[in-house]
Amino acid sequence: MKTRGHFMNISRVDTCLPYNHLTDQRQSVDHQQWVLSVGSSFLESPRASSHAKPYSSLPPPVMASESEIANTLLFLRFFTAFGLASIAYDHCLTLGMEFKVIWMNPKTGWASKAAFWLNRYLTEVIIAYTVYIFSGSYVQLNDAVSDFNFIWPIKFPIHLGQLCGQFLWIFGSAAIVFGAVTHSIVVLRVYALWDQRTNVARALTVTFFICIVATAAIGIACELKLQPLFKFSPFFTTCILSSMPRLISVAFAVQTFFDVLILVITVYNALERPHRNHSEVITSLANDGFKFILAILFLRSLYLVTSLVGNPGECFATVATCWGFTSIITARLHLRLDSLALKADAGSDIPLPLSLDHSLVRDSSWWDR
Image: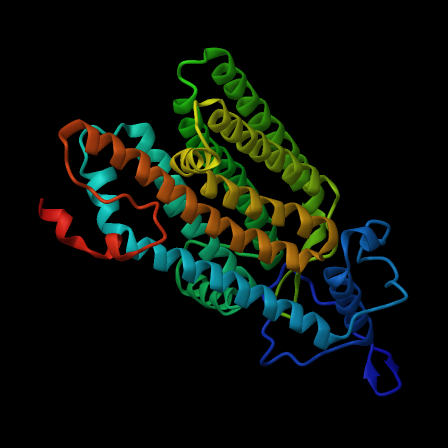
């Protein structure tokens, strides 16, 4: 082993092997340059990093400092944790109504229950998994599993490099499923408003399936492009995305386009109804769930804007957090639709969960009615 000054010229750490940052203090100059080159692209905007070379080549001329990379990782970790806490808190608020309207209602079909489970519970699992991955704590878990494999005769090899790629596939697949479920819930609401106009309803349904297929195809292409870019960084003990392809913005643009279409149809439906003044139009829009459709459009627009102007770390944080808030909105819309059906069926007096006033949800007196 040769020396260069007072640094030891060691080889790079294999990212597919467990790394114990408490005992192994070997930090070579080449390894530090690799960390900074990957971390700098983690902070760059997609426009600046689209022409950057892979991490295996020479580092870019301007490199971010370790403190800047650490600040971005802290933003990513705390922002995703905030999204997880928000969706968990809202789930606790609506848990009683969920059992009453969804799980204990015999007239709720299996499709409605499956859609609610995917929208609510799958989202919580994926966001919790995202918080876990970017926290870096899975490094210690990997060491524990390795020790367990030493004792147990059956081997379960877990490599940190493979774990990053697996997380990316799980996150991307769940995002495609979540987009299809949330759009279907909103489409069912809008479809009910146009039940007397079959042409508009059919056109909306066809557009829905086209957008879902396009999003799935673009999402798979994005996964293939992101796999070689999403690597484990031993220095920061977490997965880092070196750059972000423009194809991600195309996928978000397709979803945003469909949300705009739903919003236009909702407004057009309210204007087509007979009305004497503008206040009746506003009331009609409120009854059609206009503010919640608008909120979903705003959240999906954040996806698109962040993917265009933000760095990969900011994009991951925004997508995960807005994913949670979108799940909250669509879950409350789902509960409203099913509670309206239950209320009309037996004349039961069930409060509607779509109001921002949580007193109705916290009040469990309706449970025994």
